[in-house]
Length: 129
Image (cartoon, rainbow, N blue to C red):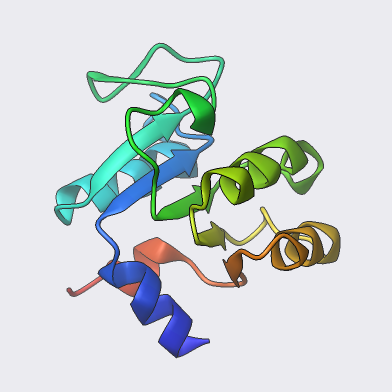
């Protein structure tokens, strides 16, 4: 999986599904870490208007550009619609943060042609870079 992780980290346009303005939540920490490392990153959460003074989008279809990587920070039970959007847009890679994955969403993503990173944290991978 290291090859796929490195491929994902080489992509510059990301969406964080489950991004939040609450600084104590992983949805914020992941979004901020990606931004701080120079990625073009879009917050996606239908329940927020802004994250870190950036416009928050209700879904992947609303983004101004297609993300190369979709980072999932939502419960697996809420992920199906986003996975299907990612596949229909041709996003390429979906990254399930620890706790956001399940066998079902991993299988669905793979079955729809998405490359899948799971059981891995992007914040840990970017630490020290």
